[in-house]
Amino acid sequence: MAGLLIPASCTYLSLTAPRFADKQLGYRERKHALSNLIQTYLATFQDIGVETWLMHGTLLGWWWNRKILPWDSDSDVQVSEASMHYLASYYNMSVFHYKTPRIPEGRDYMLEVNPHYVNREQTDKLNVIDARWVDTTSGLFIDITTARYNYTHPAGEGMLSCKDGHEYRDTYIFPLRDTFFEGAPAKIPFAYKELLEAEYKQKALTLTDFEGHHFDEEKLEWIPVPEKIDPKIEAEKKRKEEEKKKKEEEDKKRVEEAKKAKEGSKKAEEQNKGQKSDPGSAPVPAPPQRGDTANSQPQGQQPVPPNVGPAQGQQQDSPPPVARQPKPRPAPEPPASQKAAEEKQIKADAKREEILKKAEERRKAEEEKAVKAEEKRKLDDEKRKADEEKKGKI
Image (cartoon, rainbow, N blue to C red; front, side, top):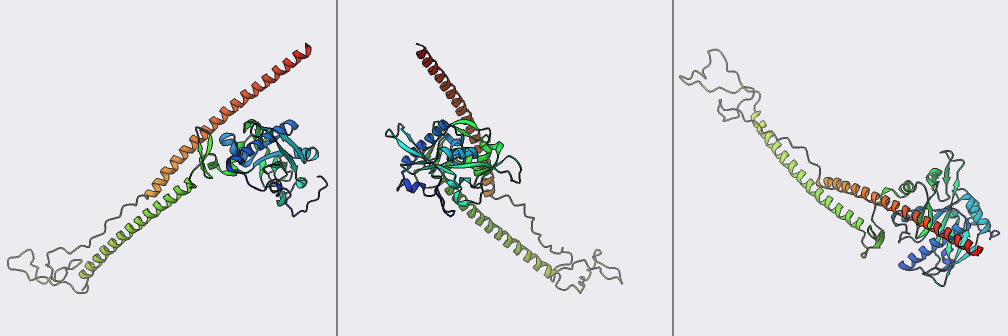
């Protein structure tokens, strides 16, 4: 295989699945096949002494329940550059036969290394996958990428990069953590949570409804939703309809208030206009009545007109009409939709914190379980070796 020349314009591993299968598996069959695929991969790499770890969507599946996400059609893992050189030199195109309880007749799995793996540049867009672990019966595969040290990275030393464009600080990857995945011993990056949040955002670690599935926290399983309705989309649609309706009502209310204010202002202007219809002439005082000392004026003096004269036909002693001033409008309250959105956000934040807490508790429980299982396995191995030595002495 080392002498095979592939044109630079060809994606070498793009035809892996069609070469081995001409039809797609059903939902349940695919889940079982992918589970067998990752189990055989992890077992093989442990046997040949090559360090590998879970990444991307497969790492996200581990976060939720230590299993492959049911809507995934492949798995993602990484190895170091030295490990990829080793695989290309000694195990390229090797076929491994495995028998499992699900497949008693056995199945062949092949390790295929892309000859373009030696190109370290991210510009090689057609060959971003360096190798694959292939189920030769179903055509399903695991993508294997290489984490290479980028010695010219602007961020300085310790930067790892892959040909698919992902970049990490090496302290986010190493030292690797021991765990279990699909029931098999596995390894994950040291800062797995930070990597997942950077790639998928924090919501991916708490969102329990996705891709037509709902996560059952009691069973720790992704359960398919019978109806092909995304609860998230439906909730968002309903929220937008309610907001639109409330906005229309608020706009209608504002228009009515503006109309009333305009009418009040118009009436006030008309009243003021009537009062100032003849601003140049002074009002003529009524002739004093006999015995009316209050209204009598000294001889030779003219009456002092008031600031605003009375309207035509009004009595002198009646107060001038005052235009009614519109009452100040109270400050508008925030829309009900805004209050509902704020309350919803508070509840969502509380729920997210609760889910994160439960997930961390699950992780710790799984880690403790894994440690106990590993200790038990070591004790069993020691006991078996002791029995073998004892038999050998006899």
